Image (cartoon, rainbow, N blue to C red; front, side, top):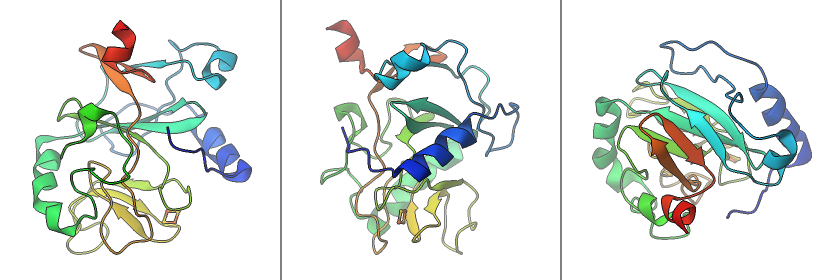
Length: 198
Ligand code: FES
């Protein structure tokens, strides 16, 4: 597990920001705080897994949860988003997550996820711990941008699998937490399927 490198001020900002309830709709940047089915605050602080209902997610939408006091993003990728991934290999520092990238074994691949459609990431920049922004629209961060995550602190860029570009300050892909699907529309963050069976 990655070292928690968020400074206290930034951690407070992240936690406060996600405590606001948002509506669910088609917009890509809506981050509802999903807490109704989760354990108590003390259990969460101790690292208890967090169950998330994704049944209402729209294609292209990002939602955010908190696990071990870190922001965890779930992005429902469209087929068009997934199709961008093989096009970027030459521009990425570690496209196959073979170096120091942190993810469960199931995510050590191009899509960095269990299912093409759903991407789950720790929302903390691997440079100095800022929270990158979801920028899914092609051209949004430069003419060649195909969608991904942009960290405004120092300009690091990540694709729609959380893979870091070459020649930016961050040198690792965004971390993928342990998780698995406990049903078609429910994800348990904090435990892989193998860990759950053990
Ligand atoms: S913290 Fe993200 S680019 Fe520096």
